[in-house]
Image (cartoon, rainbow, N blue to C red; front, side, top):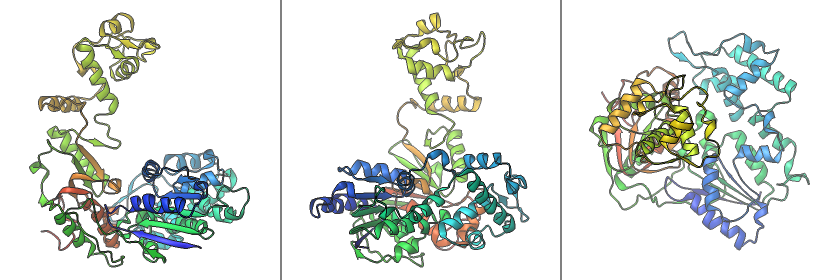
Length: 516
């Protein structure tokens, strides 16, 4: 291994900026390294997109660890056994899947009455491989030791047999193959001549992923690693902050936050003091004072002005918040939200334009057709429900749609195929003066989903929702450091105002003493 530079820094201190604008430029302009001999790796696809925007040079790779492995090993994606539905569907079709046959993977209830979520056995297997530990230890760390570990072992063996038979591999296999095939010394390898490697979001890598990075790094002249152990929030996927904490090299600490104001900075430090094992990093708030509101309630917040992020520990709690916004008529966006989809909103806008006498684009009319109720003598005539007759027509009016393209609808957007609750929601929004098509100022997200982002106003729920006796809470009790890191990430998204919500349950994860 050559010279290693480590760039730690709390939120908003410009770690990625330092990595790209200083060290990458230095590598190319001062050390005269060919950009085609430089690899830039980051943990997430969002990180890749952000880095690609910043980097001005044509590097060999700007990839996630998994994408790098797929590309370098020339793996056909059809041979990748991806997580979720695809994994189980493929596995189910294999004739010798005894373990799979022996159990239904529907949500069940354990002997204590706690929900037991599907694929917990697979969670244990994947976590064990990420951390390079045995299944028993993985089950303990995930608070899943109540699961039938013998079945987990059987499932693990069946999965290995399945992969051998089908020649399919998982991401963990890919990381292991990367080193086994000795890519750095293979003349056919694209990375065999790499001279410098950059790693961003390092705190989120698992031990197995770090091994892959160290393998690449050992033949490089220089390496650069940016991250913040206090923002290690993917421990449930195997990320281990201790690896980043114990890195050896030349440190270039980033200490000035350009995001976090003083009052919110003080609350963030309060959280950090609860974490036992961490790098001791001094950092400064920006000059603004900021505002902090503790034990607030949603009903006391005026969401009509400014931009907002509403953050919660879990999607389960976000579901409850979503129902509240739906009920009182507050428009929001959330990844995967099915209440007001983009297609519904676009269709509404198209219909309003048509009613005003305007012409609309072909693709907008087609989208609208999909949202209208479709049946014979209904709102879209039978045979025209796909909008195929619009093909090749650049613009079309309401009269033309009714005359030539099967549109029977008239009067109201309520003829869209949406339920009554959604219709009432739209009516409430319109009554409050919402034009529906303006960019919504409110975003709902988990704290995990907010990583790397910021907002003027942040609403933070450190609760778990109405059912507190479930897996995430058990994990929080087992590993409070991980939860404090998650809370820290949530707090430090706020650029000006932070609202910490009052607890919803008796099982409330607090920074200090429990609130009664």
